[in-house]
Length: 331
Image (cartoon, rainbow, N blue to C red; front, side):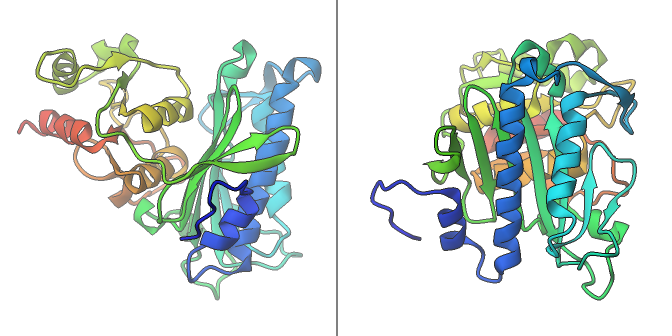
């Protein structure tokens, strides 16, 4: 572990000094590409009202949701930054129906990139924080060009994951399995600078986060758990809910707490996507001393059977998540 003695550290230097022992220049280059995408998206979001980016595009995504113009822009940008570099064998995006093969005219690499280009994008219209989520896997079979199987890997096989939060400042937070580290974009320099090294959930949690409007759709066990959160037996928590998974997760990572998006009677698998949202953030949570569960087992142990599979998500301080599991499992 390098000792920087309070010096200014760019994300490029940090990645070079801390990349996994078995990583190569392709991993470093891929992380640079993600950081560059974050810078460009940040600039576009900050100028959203001036560049006709606000509002809906004239299309819907695979989930039947209206695509925002920034969704389309961010999705296309990440593809165009990464398709020709020779670092990837395949990509998968929450905005695309099928996995994205690397065009035949370009060399393939050993990594797989899955991503949600812009989580909570409708919040841009009302100037509320949004995020980008990503995870990196290794190809299942390097001899193959790139297949669906390369994308459908469990969270426990993630090489690195992270998110970018576009808020009052732009932050890139990522982990390769050795701690969780945060970098804040200096808009004057155009550089991500190390601002939060080795982030961890505080021992004393502060917040719970869930959309209370849907409680009538939850199983009784989840409603009982929420009652426990409000009781004298639980830690003294305050309710905070932004409606952008990344923003809620980020606040709870810094301040401690728990985020809930359980299944509902009419939608038992919940709404959050296992591959693009739940898995990457579960990986970060565990590397920050937390835990993510579907109520019965670790999110990291779930193997996706389709690109857009959903799962209930409970993530945050380990003791709070494990207590939720006890309520759900009737223990």
